[in-house]
Image (tube, rainbow, N blue to C red):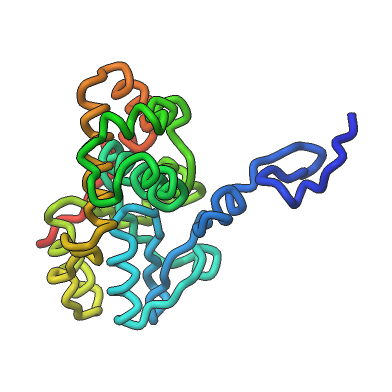
Amino acid sequence: MHLDFNYKDFDFVKVNDKVTLDWNRLWSNRGHTIGEGMLSPDRNYFYLNIPKNSSSSIKTALTSLGWTYASLNDAPSAHIIVVMRDPMDRWISGMVEFLMMYHQGIIDNIVEPNNYDFMPLLGDKLGMSLLFDRMTFDDHTERQAVFLRDVDFSNCTWFMADKNFNNTFSIFLNSIGYANNFKDAKKENSSDDVDYHKKRKLKEFITYVVARDNFKKYNVEQWLWCDYEIIKQAKFYEPR
């Protein structure tokens, strides 16, 4: 059988007469590639970027400390810093990001931009149930485990992006010689920002849908099983 297209134009590539998924092309058109991150000036540490896991704040802080953008392949012997997030919370946040980035025009045509309290209407018109059929739509809704492909877990320091994360991560950076004020970092979006209001209302609505429908919740949790498994096994950093 002959397929008349160029493999390099797709997420799948032909290797040794087999079609293989090219992970680095999977979401690169959306802005992220597998194995991207930041390398410390001494090249001893590599922060592995996983979208929606406080990544924007971390990259801003590390840039100010002289860390540079790199790939895992650039420093194979570096110790890897991994930040995980509660899988369900991340999925909901990622879905909000996806809708705002690629479908905001549709949403704003359904309800007034400053009147996002009419979420039942939005859910019906937007076809919200489709979100629970596919689960992964882009790099923000992709499972965290995908970004950990080929990573040696024994060579990682693990963090959880929870309410204590800023302080914990700040202490860690200090402990490896990078004095910082990350513990005082604030979210980029202001509560007065229109987009912030939209995202907050969308998150409230999707959270509501998940909470009231056990079948949808179960399906999402099953899809995210690999992330839950990693979190269960990881030994997260604890300041001394």
